[in-house]
Picture 1: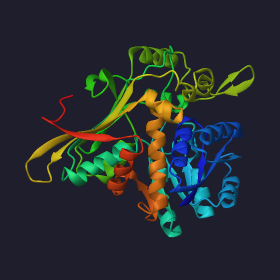
Picture 2: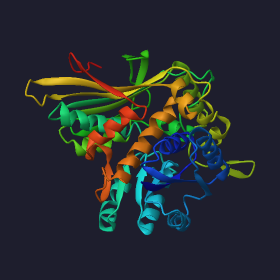
Picture 3: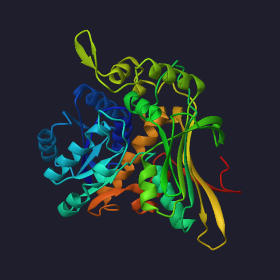
Picture 4: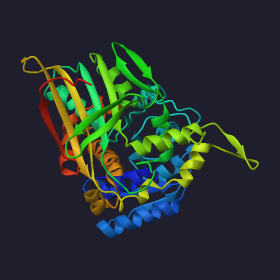
Length: 403
């Protein structure tokens, strides 16, 4: 039994809190805080209606370390689950160190004024968390998160090492909107418009955003166009699995989505540099976020499935030569909405956030320090995926990927 403080009240938070409430033997008390308390109250009301569990709600400016420390102490939380914006990672880690509380997030820190997705800022906290006897878990979403655990599981049970790794993220859902992002528009568009990078032969190889397209037949979804992108788990996986020769990340997008983003980028609406508008300084991308559909409101409209997983090639543990395995999850948007009122993209991030929190609270992952998911024992996490709505399967492929 453990007490948890969840910071952030978006779609991922809603899923995580609902799933925590569905596991009261692990989460004895749940507190939820955000800058806008009414959003927390809405989530708490849904949780109460669906599960009967009461969630305490609070107003909090996550950038105010002293306020976060005071709330951690008032709630008696053993773990802070950060499902707020990645700009807030470091200040929330600072608050956890001051309050003596464990930490978990779903995405790595990035500066607000620069689209730079790197772990070095958070890895620099390793000694601080070790000396404090506290655990910090980084990237407990699906990608990063589950995809990293998938790689570790394959490396533990199927392969003695990973030579090539491709992370494939497919959303085959349709919400009927002309243009809408699957998660926080500000973060989503920053990722999509950033240059693509992948790891190959001991170095990073960079290419222009959205220029490398491959059609792939995804289990449960069908053939979709996927694009080479940069994603933060490539950095941590290539660091912690030094035998990797090539690591890439792919995400699917429809033609209409690509066309919309291209136009918005061409007219400056995806910029994160401040501009003056009617005497007021605004950031175009943040303004764009306010006029786009809220991903949290798309659950009732979205139909179809997601398929996310890893294709890994390496020497087989049993000595039978090189083998390639595809390990993945298929998630249904409508089933997610029926269970927790959210679409599958939020579900596939919120459920792993809950499972990662459970790993800390139960002691399965409790070593002091700052850890990426692939550094930890995959087995208890993988077991909970199967029982908490994200069942996975693994198949052997005939050969390494040829794309």
